[in-house]
Image 1 (cartoon, rainbow, N blue to C red):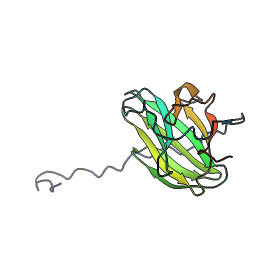
Image 2 (cartoon, rainbow, N blue to C red):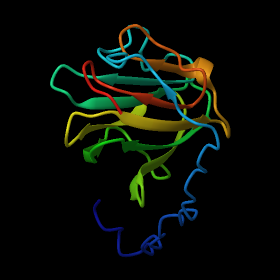
Image 3 (cartoon, one colour):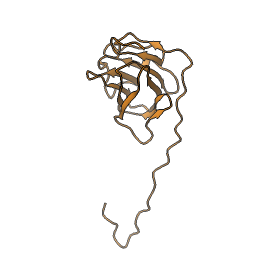
Length: 171
């Protein structure tokens, strides 16, 4: 940006707004549901960036996992936890995050918090042993299992707290 003409004062430097303190999502009190082995394989066919508010979770052909959230132009809050049941979650990479979106390491895995409207947000990751994953997800402040789609068959867990394993693996 060119400097202002000498007869006009320079615009003041405005620091970015402070982010609210990150508060980790709570742990579910229920036991996690175990999805069928291989349920997470392949991209859910209904996943599109402008799809209604939902979680879309799948394992790609190279073994990496994807978590995506959609909102259909309405603001929604997605919060959750994940961790490997036998190994560690590694190589976590956010895909499209804004100022208030967060993905961070926690004592027992990873936690995230997205405020999204009108596009897909999410992250990609792997496990160091191609093992099972435990998810604990919330949409808008609570579990919304009817808005969770796992793998090509769009398996819907009975709660937001579930375990998904690659085919041939067990938790």
